[in-house]
Figure 1 (cartoon, rainbow, N blue to C red):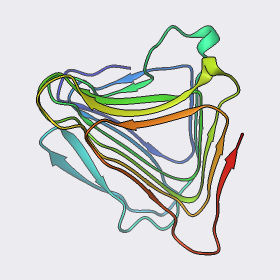
Figure 2: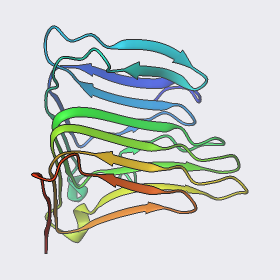
Figure 3: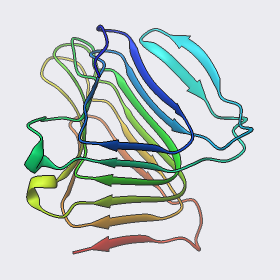
Figure 4: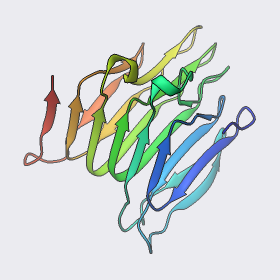
Length: 185
């Protein structure tokens, strides 16, 4: 799925499952929001696409994003790169990334940011080097790379993953002391 530059792709509803596809919004936004029934999500028009507000969302549902590189020649599966790098926003309860790659890069101006919020757990799971999970912001010009922000009470990282924000910042937030970050080698 691809939209015109500066526009947004928004998948908003219950559970979201994404297998072997590509979402491209050059210089725009990609919003993936899995909310439970009876939740309210506000929608506002921003400079580069729709911005969703989850302040009144009661609960969230699950998001599964899986790509099998053996059957796909796609380099980046969620891509907001362009003259101005767009933003990627993912919100859900249990989020699984398996072999998926995000890119929010720019050719000149500041790059976009990647924000991932999980209310229960976030799992980065890849089964081989061919299904490496990438979260990348960067710039090929004079601008700044975008930030990568991950918020989850439980984070499970298994096998091959790369998180890269050249000249931006990477923030990993664990919400409480009772929760853990798990690294599997």
